[in-house]
Length: 314
Image 1 (cartoon, rainbow, N blue to C red):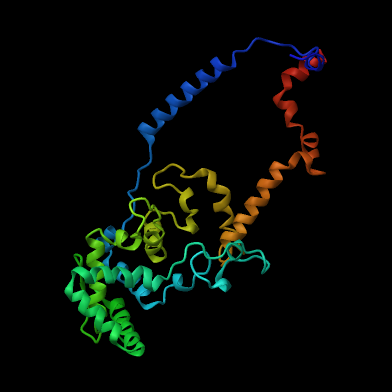
Image 2: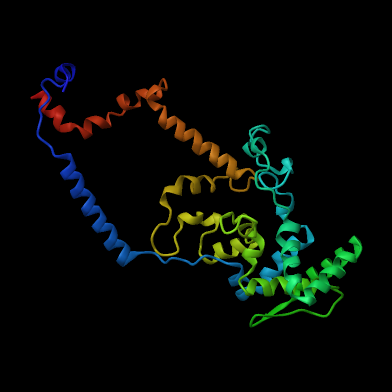
């Protein structure tokens, strides 16, 4: 210890303290408690949601989502950065604070082509029926294509699921019905994810963006509703079991419940900016005039070090 430190600590009572030993004891006790609690009270580990599971258990939902991509009418088609160039759809605060616009498109996705047409083209290589249907669809005029899609979409809303078999009313669907059945079979075979994420870099390419995007929207909302993890239910902070989930996300989840944020199209950005501001305030609290006087106004430190202050008076 330097002379300056000795002078500074002069008069402060000292005791020998083995910090390493105490640290190991605390670590051992905490580890034991965590293991025991996890063994007896661990929450269920919900398996990863896959296209195969959705296509098997909720075929109507799967077909509806597939059709939205196939028709080019999904929200992902014009989502904005980082997937498309539609900057007007990017989240922004005050009109100019928009990190998504600043960064731009870093993971380009054409929902119609990448999530529908390309998988169908892969199926067509092995399935003559899909190949014929796809060729017929491409040869049709845009108006005819949209007419088939519209007819199929209307019928799909009234379709029924008979133990996994989709019962669809008779109608003029052209090749669209066959193409959607091809997508359904591909997913049920467990091959849709690979068809979506296929890359020349495989097996070294671990980018699963497209297969994850395929399940977004209505599909993930249905799963979240089943698990009681909707945004209105505080999302993933509401664990499946009787115990809290990601409690460290409570501040985020709380902000999403506030009026003005809950229904805002810029909710994610607003929440992120508020949390970033709170983080920097805490980091620079000691040097922010006014705020750095809070400890003196609320002397919690005296409660923590009450033994020292009591001995000092004596």
